[in-house]
Length: 316
Image (cartoon, rainbow, N blue to C red):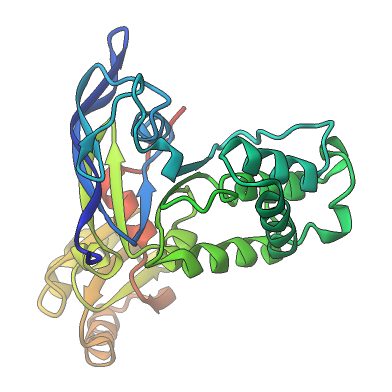
């Protein structure tokens, strides 16, 4: 088996709520052993898709295959190999972390000894040792989130769904969760939903961006970033007394950077020769007597592509 082999396949996946298509003919593969970042704005259909993929919600149309076999919620042949950590924290408030993890292991068929050992391992891994014998309701929000993730891992699933796993975590906990997820790459398949583009960049082998229930792009992180063009992003903001000439200025700059975007008083373009292009652009400004308020260069980010594909409008 190779990392290119699909372990999970969705074909024409559709789910409607009344007149609204939450998921609209969605098709994609998840490769064995990869970490897939599953991205989209609020209301894009991410959580609905995940619930169908792990057998918690029946699609109205389409097909889901897990390890090459149809997934049927009524006959969940492979769901014992799946782990799910939902966006909403789900723990037992009157059990300790150690008890919850051991109990979950027993539900999945582990022996008492194995369940206890696995519970101790995960308590240590997720930094819960000092609170291992405290009731779940007494844990901080961040600890409850870490326990929520640990509960999905007790039975060593081969496919793991993490829905916003880093929501509410402090920076140290975010690093801990990120490093653990990356350690699973190759041995388990991980599908992660997140609104944090930087985390998706650090975590993912590939990213899948959906909007309004439809697939926009599915590719490696590097390939998705390159949709804005190769090279660095250069952003210029003109001083207030120079902004009237912005529209004519773009025509001149296109000689050095063909693809230009304007946003209010700012210009943005991509260049593979930043060091060579910037002096030419500054010369254009000087020749016109225009003043620059700000100049910055940076690498392209997933957020840049995400905004380009899904727009800047706020979502419910």
